Length: 320
Ligand code: NDP
Ligand code: GDR
Image (cartoon, rainbow, N blue to C red):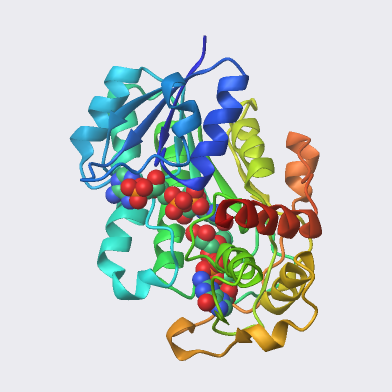
């Protein structure tokens, strides 16, 4: 039986990856940082099948202890301070978690067992102010937030440990992926949740920043398979994972309201609100997943329309 350890097991992606690996017959371990309240809503349905260990990206010895205890074949580093906007309020902490945290984990792997295969959750935010479209593995990075800068560090330290110590380390450059389990502060879930609440007369308005940014939005459940596939190859490498299609925030809003039968979305939406704008914006992202398709045999399965419907319907159920 193969063993996998996932950092950030309470997060969106980890919940889907854990389900996926359990179905493949893996023994799954997940790390959490200590918290004074229970924080397991995304994994409560599979919690009795997972072994939870304590591990904080700020504390290298806790990561080494988790590796010693779990003895994993594969480690998926999904833990991070992942909300871009917060990274301007907490730039140093974001660097500690999202950048140096990767080195702490790689160092723990190097010392405990360098044969462990490693997946790093890199991001399309590294492309930032894009220099070409669609973006692929060779596109130059120009991050636009402390989060994006931290992810560039995480990406290159992964490449460096692969080249320096021959560690099987892969970096998945994933474009935005969403689900009904997405955190409420991210724009897609903020919209789906507000639309459901407006439909049920529990909320009056949806307040947003700019409606113009375009993102390549996929379904998280599809993307975790690509993470696993990267670690099943003969050689470690880096891959862009995306849908190859992008849509504006405005299109997401329009479609989400349509799902609940509201055509006049403008009546319920306020935008260009200063508190939701960012000091530097990423305007346009669209990914080329050609390499992943060619080498991994991976393609996205869920369309934009299906994703929006899935999220709005799940929020309607929850809010009822
Ligand atoms: P989430 O924000 O849902 O989950 C992040 C996880 O990291 C949570 O479990 C959180 O724990 C944990 N965490 C945060 N800080 C620490 C710390 N110091 N030590 C240990 N754990 C910590 O993120 P997603 O599931 O959406 O994303 C997973 C990864 O993929 C992240 O690294 C993200 O940056 C990256 N990514 C995500 C994309 C997306 O569109 N979803 C796209 C590209 C990359 P807690 O519950 O305690 O806060
Ligand atoms: P992003 O996701 O920054 O792309 O990072 P987010 O959903 O926060 O923003 C997407 C775009 O929508 C615009 N926007 C708003 N965003 C939020 N959160 N709230 C608003 O009210 C709002 N109004 C407009 C944003 O400015 C932005 O342009 C996500 C995270 O999961 C990262 O961890 C991951 O690396 C990247 O996706 C790929």
